[in-house]
Each structure stands twice: as structure tokens, then as C-alpha cells.
Image (tube, rainbow, N blue to C red; front, side):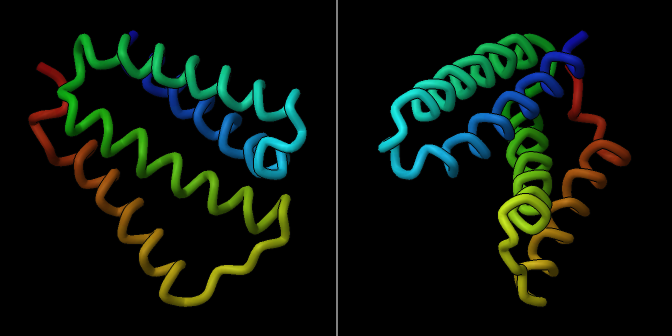
Length: 109
């Protein structure tokens, strides 16, 4: 169940970040408020995941997967480009998340 909580935390954070971009610096109050609520939901589910997943591992996965998804949304939805160093950095982050999940014994206590 803790992995479901972590997944929901990631989804809520990605939604919050995407809507934050559309809030135009909180000048669109409704979207800004929705973003804040989404971040609250993300933190709530992250806190539930932390009952079983160590803090450093959960945060690395949450942040890493979030970065990858938000970067893809930036490219596809917002038409933002990524140069080679950005793509390499994102690939290294994704690789780190995979290494943690496949090879680490510290993922669940």
C-alpha cells in the first residue's frame, strides 16, 4: 500500500506543478489555489508512504520521478525544449531511481 501512497504523492505533485505553471505566478487565483491544494495532497500521501519507506529513499523516488514527468510535460504540453545536458541530467536522475528500486535493500523497512 505504501507504494500506492508514493505514486499518489507523485501524481498530485506533478498536477500541482503543472497547474502552478498555468497560474501565471498566482495571478490566476483559482489555479494558484488548486496548485496549493495539490501540493497539500502530495505531502499527505508522501507522509503515509513514509510509514514504510525510509525518508531518503521515498524522497529520492518522489523527486526523481516527479522531475522526469514534469520535464516530459514541459516538452509535450508547454513546448519547452531540453538541451543535451538537461536530457543527460534527467536520464541520470531516472537511472538513480531505477538503481534504488532494483538494487537497494533499503527501500522498505
